[in-house]
Image 1 (cartoon, rainbow, N blue to C red):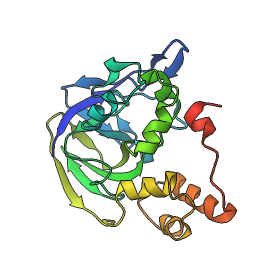
Image 2 (cartoon, rainbow, N blue to C red; image 1 turned 135 degrees about the vertical axis):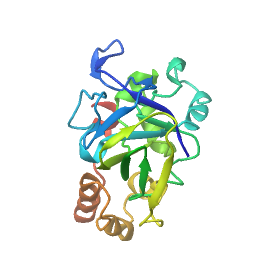
Image 3 (cartoon, rainbow, N blue to C red; image 1 turned 60 degrees about the vertical axis):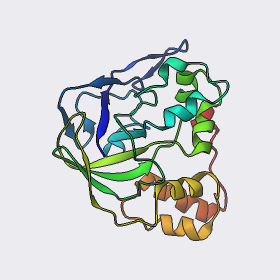
Length: 226
């Protein structure tokens, strides 16, 4: 597998609402420096919910765009290309069913570890011109995923992904998404989630909170900003 497109972005105003966001990414052919916090030339506006060591680099499967092009009511077709979901890496042949939590990959001179799937937020509704886009992404499990950087270095378009280690083959991202968004109070799997060492701490806390309260957290703020 290789990087089809490598993308970085600057903070811009999103939609008529004028929300600051770094979701708009543009392809780069340059060899890009990668630090623990992500690509040096990439920017995020909301650093509480985006970026940081557990969400240093965002990967989205190029194949998913064909699915979204056929969804009714999505009003902003010009964003149905690499970078539309704010990803840094676009590939063909890797998706939420084939990638597992804790997978370690060498790409260029960088070593990456899969830390979590993406939790779609309300800015996707603005980006795609559909008030329910964030929920549609969540329900489809076509969310993309994040890496933490284990070894800093440089990457470039056409660099190949080399799988170094797969310690949790029983935990593909699709299974994680199923527990998070569909089988939401599966206590056995939630308990197991809390023990997954490579899983981002925020996701472990979500699992622990559900175990303690017997309830699912409110998604309205994240999905609809309300």
